[in-house]
Image (cartoon, rainbow, N blue to C red):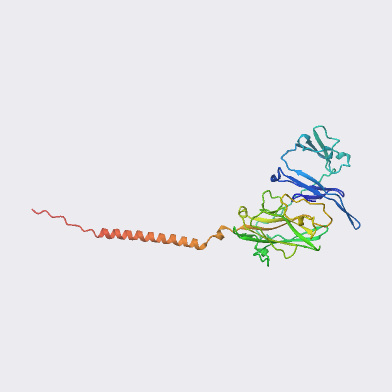
Length: 371
């Protein structure tokens, strides 16, 4: 499947899958293609359906829905006038073969009505368990935490086991990674940040492609307003430099530390990556930068992997106390103390001068009156 970055796939039954995607506020007014094919094996042969695509328009339409909860079922009533223009007979619950789950049986001219049993029609039940730990009022608690993110290992059909390593380096030589014990890493604005993503796989003749990279205060794909470094395979940050590869499964790049980092306590660099067979003309890797979004042609078996998400950090700006010049503070203190000393000496001199002038006054005796 292909689509927006945070689209997910869920298998509901042996023959059915559900594709889920939640748009963000910034997606309103835009169109997003979601495409998929279905593959299956029969012996040594691999079969595929034709690619099918749905164009999703994100709008602000509010669907009026009323949910009534009963002891053994839920009743969902949706006002048809608030729904987008769709064929209502295409709507169904997860188990349309069960007559109880039919929407047509209960719907009317103004509302679509679904009666959903709590144990059928695709209902998923989640159990919440509360737990707690009780400690003595006094005691020692020890906990070890590493801010550095571990490698990401996934299993992808056609590529087998894939491992992605995302590391920061002190210079463009990329000789040795920064010690994980030094995280979170600190930079001044304008410092260059060196990074490398490297993939390891048992499949030969493969190439790594970085489709997007963002900076955000959390290492999640759903942060609404990240700082975009790479988008749809295109460079977006003006300071971004991509370095020559020593092999096709690595991606070395750097950026200048930017003000976005200083707006948050810390940020992570997160990237969306995938693997392709090298030399194939119809893969996402071979198409490179696509400013209008990626459009995937019919996918042949094992030409490219799914999209995977890697992250590393956190990063933060150097604290002001650490960047201040202690010599300057010392000099200012010396100036202040010297100034006070000079003022005190001036006061003493003034008093002595006043006394000296006062003691130098000559008095004339008054003439006596003699008869």
